[in-house]
Image (cartoon, rainbow, N blue to C red; front, side, top):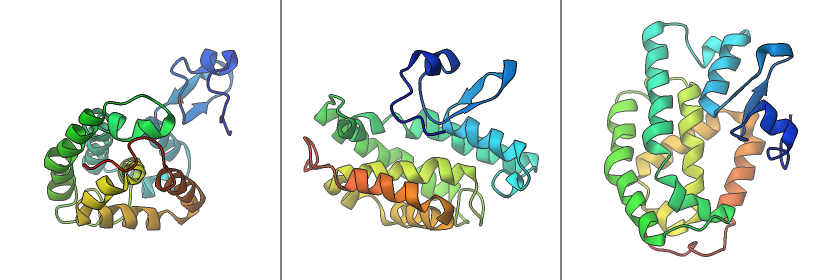
Length: 192
């Protein structure tokens, strides 16, 4: 369901009080699930073929869960001051620079030297929901072209591999890329 412009309606908030997308709504008294990684895990468990992106092996599944949790708790927070300016949210430019440095010094090395150490994708030679959760987030850095230019090449190559691995989502990846790369507002020309 396309929820664009509907997440603040009373009906949506009654289903999902966090008013965020994606949200999976289930009929009857089953309620809803939100947060991207929770939605991807649920979809993979509900539908045949889901083990391709969320393997049943408990160790591999644990590693995928680890990456998804890392994305939500460690990787994502620095994006607020870097990217939310594109959504019209007031941000602190000094904090954006500080957070980008943190991405470069702490988070990108974890991605490259741990999750991608011997594999093309996070802990795997085939893409999983961990990659689908992590890589598209990097597209938001393109809203600040000078920041994007400073992203390590290994991160950019990983980003491109993941986008290419999910051709069925190409329309949405292009929409996100166009939105970010087309941003011309305050902070777009900032130096990292």
